[in-house]
Length: 213
Length: 232
Length: 194
Image (tube, rainbow over all chains, first blue to last red; front, side, top):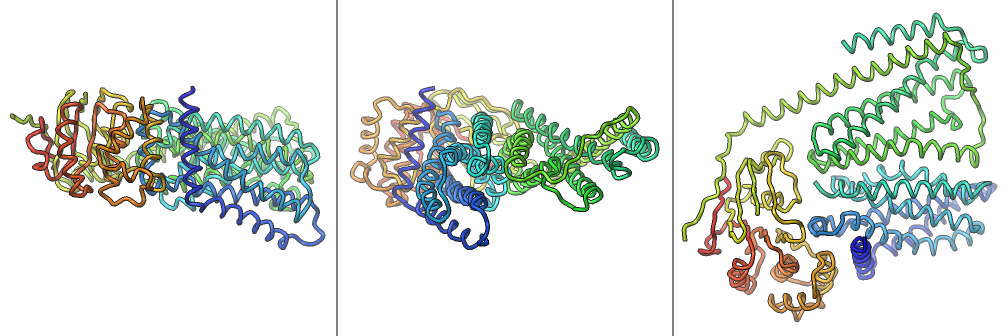
């Protein structure tokens, strides 16, 4: 078990280090999410409620996450490095955990800018909304990383990833919006936790089959 | 054999539904679509479940055969899923005058599933044939079957919090004769799906065999490489 | 160590590896020859477990921690330094006394001075030498080398030729090459793919 943790940490650290050097993905995500929020302001009619804006926050988060996920396996794909990782004796799930943690870090960093921006442009966000974002992030990164690994092996990978990911993300959006503007945030948060638990287990068990033959 | 049974059951079921079962007190003649819509929906679920089972077998045993079986089942499920959407839409139009209603849970669920399983086909087209494609498809099929209950919960959650329920429909209080007609229809749809599945699977396996034979004939059998010892 | 019967690989309709039998015992040095496209790379990838064969069966007597592969691409992270790359793989392979081992390998293959440089700044030859370090990091019992002389510069070629003698004594080697003369008389077995 400690091997899994250590390997995941080493791999996550590697991705963070790579991003620190390249500085490509995170700035893009930050800029994208703020731009999206501005676009939403212009997309919403004047008399629309805060609730609609709350919904659009989730659209922004989802597509920012997609931006990060599309870049997730780029190095491994371009340099054939997935082979190198799969050759090592590490548990394949460590590859998934490490990568998901890195994507999570980028997403949280983007949200650290997005959420205050949202409060600035639209309305304040309650504690339930923040909790919802946190839980949703886990689900997005867990499922998104696995699906990104699937997509990366094929042609038209940038097109394929959103198609594979979005239907799976619909429940996350429902839970997130419920936590943000719904009447019973606790129920939505519980649902998000359920989603995270179920899909995390599923991803953990099945990642190996996605990257090996 | 199976196709005959399917044909008989479907026709019998429809006949019973249209002619023999009494009209629903509330909805009148439009309720008859229920005899097609719900069995088709249940059959779609059954197909997706079958696909997930075959996917699990593939991952468990590594036997290639299961890949085509899982793929065909997903294909069947998608076809019946589209039928569900179409019949559901017709029923909505007849009942409420609109082609689509977000408050109709089955419809929304099938829309999500349709999107999900369409992406399944995109995944398959995007990967070259081989173990990688088989395994990724299998994992995705498993995700699909887990998505079904989760999406259902999500839709209920969404209804309560975000989309007020505009139209409701009581689950049919079915009399015995209605229930009997329904069961025959359901059996018919399942048999139909099974028959189509059998036909398509056989077709795909034949295609595969033909490809193999063609390849075998096209190339000369290569000289078998032999490991030679080197005398030093 | 390796036992294969009727091992074959097809990509869709294209046959890449004709059915072959293979027996490699511990300590052997097998040279796989054949023109480009004859399936040498595929064979090595099948043996490494990266690609599943479509026909036949094979047994590998070592697990992943005892297997090393030198492939066509260097398989190192270009934006990490040589040291960081080897650190990462050293962790994943659970190499004991990692620092010392990495230092020793970098010195032996002439990369000590550039250990803090990103792999992207390396020449092809240097990158391949780094790849060799990566492949040898965990002292694998079985080493698979795919056309190792291809990407090396003159200095690297000389190094490798010297090394092969030592490696030959310590490990089991399967080397794919279209230029078997380079390997000299070291081979114990030769496999010629069509």
